[in-house]
Length: 397
Ligand SMILES: *Cc1c(COP(=O)(O)O)cnc(C)c1O
Image (cartoon, rainbow, N blue to C red; front, side):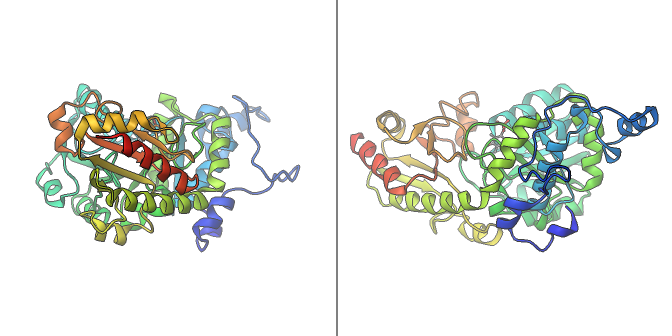
């Protein structure tokens, strides 16, 4: 992050960080450098640029000016030294893991995590000789118990997908520091507006930019933020040689979304709080999971490490699976869809949609019961969202 942005607040960073008018034309919006190649002045110039992006651009898979602007803005928002932008969240996560882990290493991973992340750790990495232990990282003691001499990383999400369980970032970062490990957090559910994990001592922040960062459900992307040394290593290693780099036009869409990130997050949070309170008082609802409710078991931790509580609300109906299906099939306004963080309200059923392939027993251990409904509360007028919930709950026996 450049010095210029260090003292600025998040609303200003969302709009301005990394973006200067074009020195030639004065264009304020960042141009989409839709080019695969960059012409060199001479052989010596080409040699330098091929060697390092610090000397200029050479080929878009190694870097591109539109991507650099996105990377600079994300680094500023997270308060990190540098960022890297990938074509999806999963591309960012896999590039990171394939760069920092090697055969014989051990990884400690939270058991409540995004389904593709779970698959990477559970199925793909073990094929390359990486040992993995899944633990409930919300219990710090369990993370400590899982440590081995060959442990290299602790990987977790907070708030976690889909049950909005939290992990104490400071506590995990402390364990990592004590044992010379790398701590990595997927902060997708919070966005940099609600929490900045690097401030808590975490080493690397991961985002699926497809969610709140893009915000409009029209683009996919992934982001890593961390120290310059690590980001340089990954750029020269898996970013460049595994090819998951984001395309310039997608980087542009993310930059456009980021301009309003701070204002969108405020409305997501306010709407989600209203929806959570409404559901908690409804006779057909058994439980509501929202970090902003005093009934959330980690409400105090949420207040400590987050600036607000986010747009994700989960709940269980008293009638279990059957009630959940009737309820969801009765919705007329909320959109039945996976993904999250869009301006539109999206609602899904983890046990049959995003987490179908996780064994029922394992699902239930991480809180994904058959009756659990996950809602990504959008920024429409909250009265319209609640009216739809009200009529759909009315259809449930
Ligand atoms: C969606 C998501 C991912 C994966 O991101 P893609 O952009 O879909 O590849 C990773 N982590 C979390 C928490 C997510 O919600």
